[in-house]
Length: 130
Length: 116
Image 1 (tube, chains in turn purple, orange):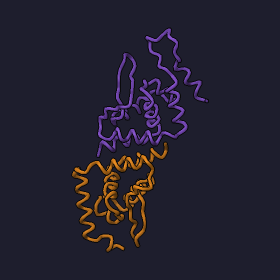
Image 2 (cartoon, chains in turn purple, red; image 1 turned 60 degrees about the horizontal axis):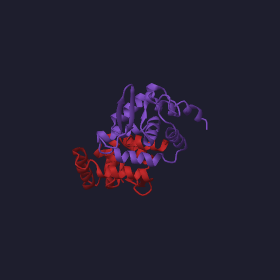
Image 3 (cartoon, one colour; image 1 turned 135 degrees about the horizontal axis):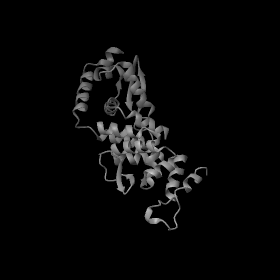
């Protein structure tokens, strides 16, 4: 029961729901979360940590980057069902649709991609007012 | 999104989950809950209200008593998913078994009938 309570506490916050929302679209690194949601780094990291501890996320490190994604391997018994409930609940929200769209449209620029034609993350901020 | 936050808050407390677990099986009035949980009637009412506002419960009056029960039909789709999850979970938990035993005793003692 304690696991469920912890998971629900993790979901009881708008910032964390917004983070889950974009991660439902694809894997993101911390800086992508910061830019898409327009929040501070400490706020992003803290909330990612809470979601990770509650068993919703998977973490992958690559050099200096930390990538987070929805844990489909389900470390806790409820997380798969809860994620599905979250997806259903958030589907129609306009702000969340826009943030999903932002993540879908941008490509991550990694060091090995320098010189290739990719859309830099900077584009995100100019899209915000659309 | 605000609604989901409310729903998540309602379930982020062990006592409320235990209350919901019993209310999924039977309608219970606040005076009966007082015999089961070590909380005052105002605390119990507040917790019931949080669960009700999240869409999990419905209530009615029987004389002086306010009776609550889980409402599986009126809630939206994700609430139903969550309710089903609560129905399927913790059935072997000692705490829940203890709560059920207390509920049976309360029913046998006809606590509600005496207070009406």
